[in-house]
Length: 387
Image 1 (cartoon, rainbow, N blue to C red):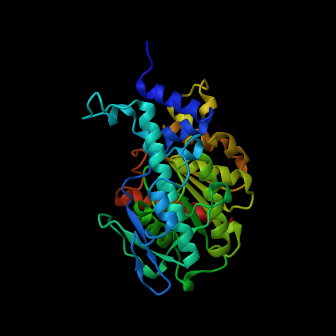
Image 2: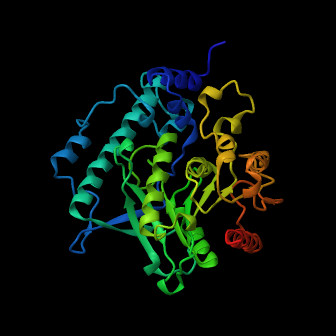
């Protein structure tokens, strides 16, 4: 029996990338929302709002638009992004036999298009840095927003790691008013779930900041929203390291014990990574976490060579209090993942988990009653950090 076209395409992609597991893993893992639910308006030094095509006259910008700014040969881990998750069968609707392209051709074309978009963003971001451009948050008007202080919001593009070509990371900071801040004020770094971005996360960001009386920082992974680069496991590690360094020096008053990591779903990966190697972090909340990426698909270790985010191994090495939250009705990441993660936390760092009896993967905070309980339990966790 022949392999299905999607499997064949993934196998070809794996071979062409030099047998890099991250290429296939990224294809199956990352789903940035399109279109994004926010925009960073670009503000010039003189206060003008710059248009999206403001740099269209520059030579570098034109070269990228025309496809002359570097080839696409030798696809590697940073060449594949969310467009790959649309499997070939879904792309052939309405095509004639003559127009029909092989799955590998479609995957390669999609990769090239995303690379091109990443290069365009890189040119613009570099010019913005040079010109001293700042940013202002513009949210999708479909979002329902809680009351908030517009002056508490700071939109920044955090300088990325050199290993990720210095791709800027779109970051949204919600600060408490100065009069409410003291030496023990916490800062939450929120690593969001998969098919979302910092625009969609803004309402809960505000609620957490005001209810827990802390600063809350939410960022987009490489290739998500207005961040540069492309989605990739290793890039998410570089992203959270860069954001953590920025927060430590610009928000948390250089006090790592006041920084709390919050990882939801796929966000549990970069959080466990950072917490396992940094023994100064103040605490961590894991919301609907998984033990590892491949274990979500199958408990078999036959495909362990393609696994990503080995959270179950890293959680054993954390040196901070950990709270696990997981819905008992979760059909995307079974609650057994959360229970295993909680069991693996070193005993001295375990905090009371919350196994939510009537909730799934994405609805834990839905409804006034559940939201109130969610905040109550997070407050208890925050208080435990001072004990």
